[in-house]
Image 1 (cartoon, rainbow, N blue to C red):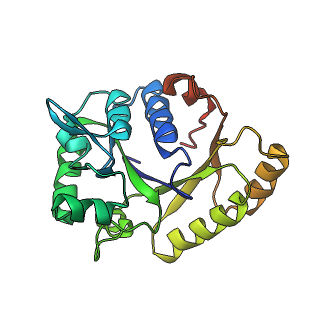
Image 2: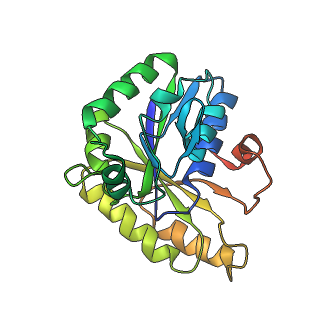
Length: 222
């Protein structure tokens, strides 16, 4: 496996935390691994151009460190749904641009990890869904599940949608985003019994722990 797509059950479930941990896990196995955030909304102006916090985190977790423009081809200023943010910025998100950036990253590493935006069904444009990029690049999918009330429903629906769209779901990661969640172990067990693919890790709620340390909670199946 030399490529991977990371999606989530929703916005704010920790896709970037999980993606950075995955990059470190691959690197710990001696593999060159780089991250990519094709479309990112919510960016800050810098002397080097618009920059997104999540994309910068993926770039920092990468080895070798790729050019930001390839990590994040579309950096959209407004913290809105990508379709709206692109419209506000007068940007036309094109699949070909995303594919070209991936193809520049691919020769640099043994693994290119592509992080999506929001949940699986969040559109990129009026005619472009994330599934189109996944299909074009033949990306296996890992689903990040934010462990909180309702996560079992969200995870099962997301898994079903990914598979119904013809993508290959290969694993899921539990991210404990709610430290006050009641009976977390029971919920994790229920979800583990119902997901159609194996769990690749269970990340604790630890905002101050870096991605390299969190990678110890990742169990790659290959």
